[in-house]
Image (cartoon, rainbow over all chains, first blue to last red; front, side, top):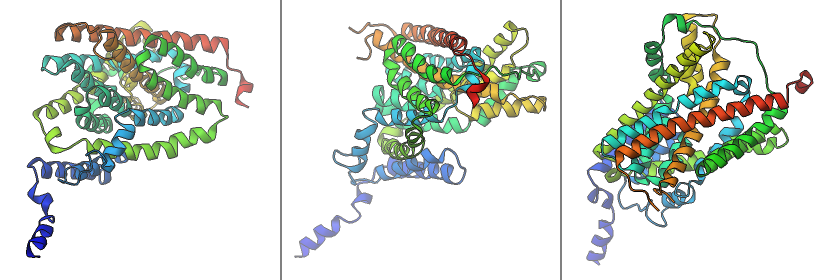
Length: 380
Length: 48
C-alpha cells in the first residue's frame, strides 16, 4: 500500500526530474517570442503560436512530439508533407494585387535582383562548413517569405526548421530597421529624390486573369520542382482576379489562412526542442539569415541604380529595396525613405510593383534552386 | 544519379545559375506581361 502511494507520487513532478539543461532556456526563448509577438507586435500571428509551441515541446515527458502526440500529429499533417505552407500561399495569392507590377513590367527585374542574397548566402554557408542541403535551407531565409522558407526547409533540412522559421519571420518584421541604412549607403542624394512617372498604363481585367495562368505554365515548365509554390500562389491570385469565386478567395485569405497559420506556427514551435535548437550552428543560421536579407536589399538597390542608368534617370534606385518578398512592408519602407528626401515623391505604387515582383521572384528563385538540386541528383 | 561535386563547385553553380536563372526567368515573365497587355489592352469600359 505504502509502495503504491510512493509509486503514484513519483509520477508527480517527473517533468522536473527529467529536465535537460536546454529545456528552461528554450522555455525562456519561447517566452521571448511571445513577448515580441504580444507586446511588440512583431508578426504576432506566427510568433505567438511558435513561442507557445516551443514552451510546450520543452516540458519533458509530455510526449507531445512523439508518435501519437498531438503536436506530432499536426506536424505530420501539414509540415512534414509541406501542405501548410502551400495552403497559406493560396491565401497570399488571393491577397496580392499584381496590378502595379503589370503596369510597369520591367520592375519585375528588381524582384529578381532582390533574391540574389539567397544564392550568395548559400555560398557563405557552404564556406562555413554547412552541407549542401543545409546551406540551401539557410539561403532561403533570404527569400523573406515564410511559406517558401518552411517548404524548402521542412523537405530538405527539417532539423533546421525551427531556426530557419524564427529567422525568416523575425527578420521580415525587422525590414523597416534593416533596410534604410543600406538604402542610404548605396544611393546618392540626387538618386533618392528622383520622381518616377505617375502616368499609369493599367492592365485589363482579362490580362490580370490570364497573368497567373501564364506564369504558372511557363514557370512550371522551366522549374517543375517549384510548381507547388508557384501554382498555389497563382491559384489564389486567379481566384481573386476572376471575381467569380469570391467566396473561395475570401475563405483562402481568411479562414483557411488563419487556421493553417495557427497549426503551422505551433508545429514550428514544436520543432524547437532544446537539444535540437541550442547548438552553435543556430546562432550562425540566425546571422546568415540577417546577412541574406541585407544582401537582398543591397543587390536590389544596386540593380535599381543600373536600371536608372539604363533608362536615363527614370528609375529611383530606392525602389530596388522593395524587390524583396516582405510584402507590403518593404514597399512602405521605400515610400517613407523616398519622402524623407523629396516629400512630393510618391514611390509607393512603383515600390508595390517591385514588392509583388519580389514575391514571384522569391518563389521562382526557390523553384530554380530546387530544380537545379534535382538536376544534380541531390534531391529526388 | 547524384553528381558528386565539391562545395566550391556547388556554391559557384548555385550562385551563377540561381542568380542568372532567376533574372532570366523574371525577364521572360516581364516580356509575357508586355505581350498580355498588347493582346488584351485596357479599355475604359473594363472598369465598369
